[in-house]
Image (cartoon, rainbow, N blue to C red; front, side, top):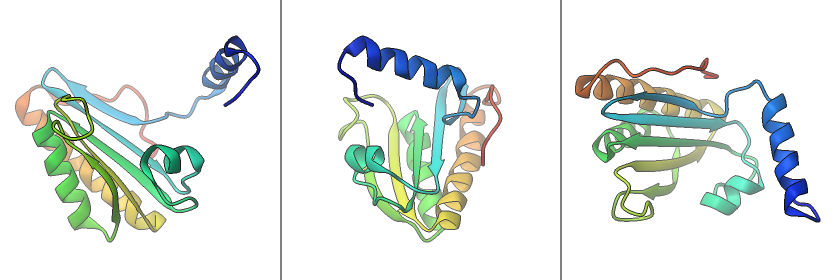
Length: 142
């Protein structure tokens, strides 16, 4: 988003967020950590710029914290569907030492959706063994 003045851009973002009722991400958390998942059927310029995702192809972002949960989610996602790794970040590479693992994937829409769904299920299961059942206060869009 661009504008002639920072306040114009800020106001544009406020209006867009206020008028949007669709969830931007699937976020589940408990006292031990969190998982976050995002999916789009067609990546655009923002995902291409941020992660190198191919424009026009499906894209998924899988985040797990603590990092051990994220690694298991990434492993499950890659084994469950025919997807390509676009980017991977770990505590020592690309996350400023935050205790999380992040996987960005691309591929056919159905494959990316399946990979994200599989990652969500294993992430919720593993995170639940470390604390309470992970909660998501918004409806899932997958």
